[in-house]
Length: 340
Image 1: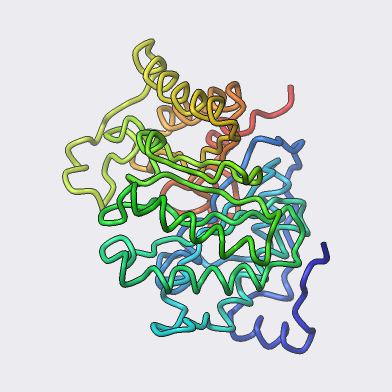
Image 2: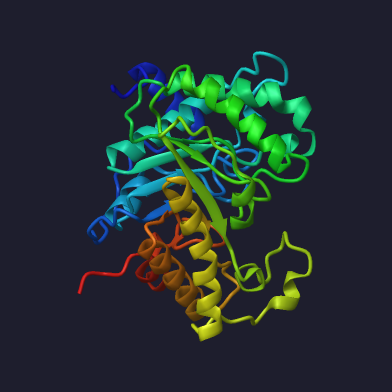
């Protein structure tokens, strides 16, 4: 397929309006060999209500930095719902669409496989029936925009279905979204998560079209939650968990292995590739515990044939410090061990 580029004059206009830096080239970073299982999330940027609201604005150099570090995938969470009309045909804002195209093109140019999704569509979680047609309308536009992009671009249909978007409803909405996407992208790789917040427990209720071979299944993993989310400001009562450690005890390791076995066994039974789309420990945990847990989860996922994207690049769970322009070497080594 051919990559779709923005006309030059319009591209320059968009760079000016959206604040992209066209003059500063990428810095020099140590290059590690690419790990085919390894990826990272560009969270808190395009999934914020407006880019920058949560302290992260995507920069051109980020894609080069991620690629040089050895990552193979980049998951780009996107909150389309705050950039689209409320009424049919639910038109997506042109500048925002071009911002996403910019991010996808930079991913591909840096030999990264981009995964774009619908993220933080909170309204569909609380009132699914009122937002079903809008959800499908968003996918109609996204799929048409990217239909001629290389096959290395993946579509993830919806992040963490929850609340009133029950497992049964999610199976229905999912089937309809796949039908919409397949009209313009018959062979595009689709990424499908579970209801019940995308957890492993939701796999038992997930129904996929058996005739479609181009679907992989994603799940998110933050167990034990009291460790990974200690001190998280958005989680009630999390301050009480401060000081929780993870030290590779036999019981701690067994719990992770059992959880990942459940995911891997489901994939084997259903003939689907499994993808750990999010995992990470918040920065208020001690760094030694964060690194130990991150390393163990990543290696155990890989040993089961599960590829992964760490949550996330440069915010509260981040492995990269955008202020200093440096990786947290302890976390980066846990994710992608350096060559001996």
